[in-house]
Amino acid sequence: MNEFIENALKLLKENDVDWVDLHFTDLPGRLHHITVRAKEFNEDSFKNGFGKLDGSSIRGFTNIYESDLVLVPIPETMTLVPWSQKMARVICKVFWGGDKGRFERDPRLFAENTEEYLNNQGYLTFYGPELEFFIFDKVELDITSPQGGTGYKIYSREAPWSKNGSYLIRYKEGYYPVPPIDQLMDVRVEAIDVLSKNFGFLIETTHHEVATAGQGEIDFRYSTLVDTADKVQTLKYVVKNVASKRGMVATFMPKPLYGDNGTGMHVHISFWTKDGMKNLMYDPNEDYAEISQIGRYAIGGLLEHARSLSAIVSPTTNSYRRLVPGFEAPVYLVWSKSNRSSIIRVPAYYKGMEKSKRIEYRAPDAACNPYLAFAAISLAALDGINKKIDPGDPVDDNVYHLSPEKRKQLKIRELPRSLDEALDELETDNEYLKPIFNSSILDTYIEIKREEAKSIQQYPHPMEIYYYLDI
Image (cartoon, rainbow, N blue to C red; front, top):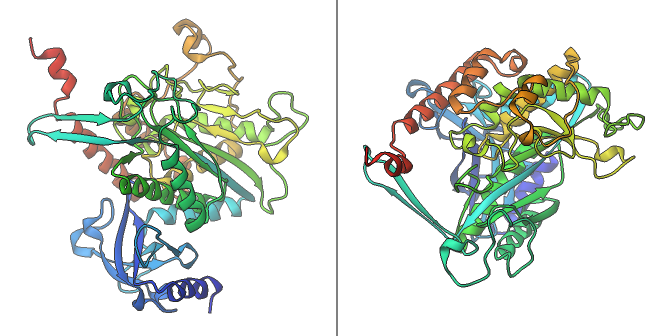
């Protein structure tokens, strides 16, 4: 018996588990589940799976006339769920019913295929996402009617508008305050305890972020492509449940608050030799940030394709309320070292440390599907390496403070200003994705996102009432 299967079955038996949650991800990136009896699990379960999924009811999956799908558990992801008595969770691959093989629109498949493709090209890649999020005491949503607009109120114990008489965080001063000013440290610590003890994470840091009301961040140790994407889904699942257990609401929505910093997911990426012995991004003889020529080419690929990548890594209409100047979110397509106004940053905390050399792509947010996002980011960087795309000179100034004339002189391009604009870019610039992403998946993804954008555009915005009611 496979060692991972043996360990998974042993975990169920020794902990007297009654139920197992089967987790999988839809095309836009939401986690779904179905719960089955633990007694149904045996060695064959990890080969034949569970034929319990109607693919036509999952966004981006199948039509109603071809809807039978099978969830096949991945044994090494089996773990106990601490907040549910006698329950375990396992991540699943999605297969067609009728023994027709792997389901082609399973997002995890694209991550698996990209990892294999990079390996065949001679590369081992590592990813380190920084997941930011908000934790609110309460969110009140008022959808008055299908024809009306949506209003909402957000309550946070740390925000001045909550008027709770406790310590408050001033506007844009939420970065690193100690308790009791940071009033959500205990929630984050509980989340990282669960991630560490129950889900095998190696947590590196957690802290309060810049925004006034309940913004936090959790960073875990970098890993390979598929494993990192699994961890992103798991971290979101854990943070939301830990908050919910306390009667609170955790959200990875990019921009829930007007006028304050939004929530991003900066992605650190490095290319190594296939055997993992040499970091190809590192050159100790390079004066500028010790970034190698291969590292520069990878930056060139990301800058070249950043506008089309936006449709995948910043995939919601709300993402483009975050991507505005002045809130540390990147807008301009430049690269630099230690410069957080650039879309690509080469961290320069240490000198002469090969293992830490990487590039940081700052555009993504956690609303993305991490399986698709990490795959697309990797393919854009690889395209730069293969085609030797020059990223141009680094820009070490605060790009937000450059005049329009200076930006024009430097030929600095911008990210799309809307989801529709990003989708336009993806329709015209997608050849770099073609080794893994076929036309069918791209067309389906674009169709889903066009529909989403169109639907939201049809609703009157609450601020439109404020601005235009007296016309």
